[in-house]
Length: 467
Image 1 (tube, rainbow, N blue to C red):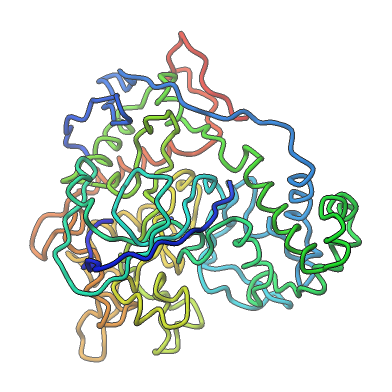
Image 2 (cartoon, rainbow, N blue to C red):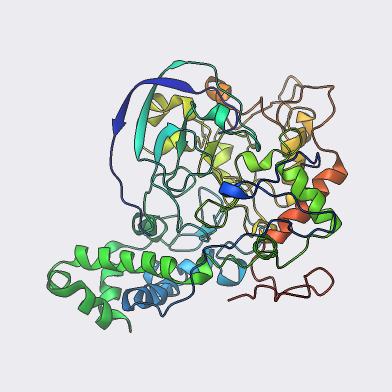
């Protein structure tokens, strides 16, 4: 995690959860062995290309085929108008369409969702939720729950040195922005039955699973128990949705220009190269501290997330109706269960660090969808504490209400000490405007479906195609 006050633990509670499978400096990191980063050459090429461990598309299983049919079936919703694909649009990398901060759903389509819509891509390696040692590159975090008790110093974390922060106890893993589900099977039931989203009713969904075109194969797969128990049939349907997301490579294609560059099949443009260096420079963007961009030792491509959680203090979004209630706060991790604001107080205000893959195609950012462009996001990262009046409103006393969407009791959890959040008023920002634009240019190389550019690709190799 980047900075926040975290508490050390006096004991660990070990559990078990099954996983079905959100800098320009030129800092030298050219060490390709063991998953380390490799700086691009002056011409934008990769001087130490890697062989990536990529899965090829196999025919979908019968269960996954059922899940695909369910994914596009609006009859599963209470209104009969919304399917999973209504929020998670395939052509937009299974993310939302438009600039609306949240989805308008419910039975009549006029209920406001609680949070912005995340992408469903690149969840195949998501570990279960835990609170434990900080390991920025692990996809298989031990399912450990560390119980925080007393305060202690928090070691800083940077893109080039994660060893110093390994002793930190941090929330990590899980699905949704607060980590409340451990598997895609569990996750599927959330939006389907949420009255503000698909607003499905269990009995009506189960009836649909018995009459739809895909009912027969699902019934066969559910067997005798499925014919006797509607709850079991529903569980099998949710499992089918999970299998579809795991088996279909469109949910995790690794087909961006960056992936081609990793394999030596593409060259960065000058501004993309500059952005990559800034992204990794611990004194500049420091983005890779949380959005890990190195290839693992086993050849698995980077997910651009460390699966952890951050309290970045995004401004309250006045466009959302529920924020008009002054007592309303969405505090992320500590709201994932009743009593969490006391039990998990050191993590209140923290939300999942999303993957940055395909981020350039999004139009809503942060848990409340308060920003609508990467330019806005980069400005906030760099200028939050230097120009707070640019992002936060003024109160009746004329003073800027900084961190206005996190109660004062939890503002100690906010990241204030790691670049680019380590600047004080009057100091120069970690990134100037041109450097912020360069990072955005690099982020655009993370969009899947890159088909090659004759002016940048190495003519001796064939660029990776969109599957």
